[in-house]
Length: 122
Picture 1 (cartoon, helix red, strand yellow):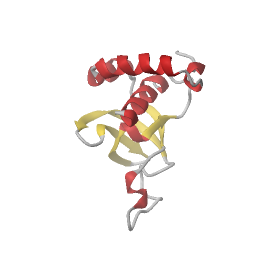
Picture 2 (tube, rainbow, N blue to C red):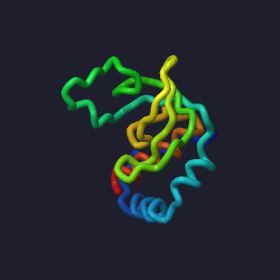
Picture 3 (spheres, rainbow, N blue to C red):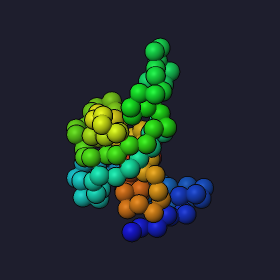
Picture 4 (cartoon, one colour):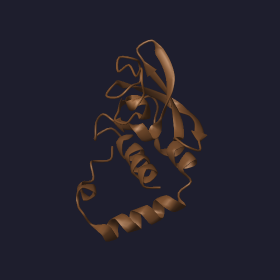
C-alpha cells in the first residue's frame, strides 16, 4: 500500500511542473484501469448541482456523502471519467473529479487524487 506523499503538501513549483508534464502525457483511462481496485469508498467533495434550484443534499451521491465506487463507466468531454457508484441500495453515476478516497492509506487514494488534481488544472 502506497503511503501518503508529503511532497504534495510543499509549495515546490519545479516538482509540480514535472509531475504535471507527466500527467499531460498519461493515457488516463488505461492508467486508472491499471491502478484502481474496485470497489472502494469515497466522499463527494465537489458537486456542480450544489448551487442549482431544488438541490437536495439528502439525495444519494450528493456533496459530503460517502459511497462506494464500483467501476469506470465512460469518459465525458465536460466531466471527465464518470464512475459507477453505489450508496445503500441506490446505484448511480458521478464524475471521478468530484471525489476523494476516504483514507490516505487506501491504495486507490493516490490514483484518484492525481486524476482529480490533473483534471482541475487542465
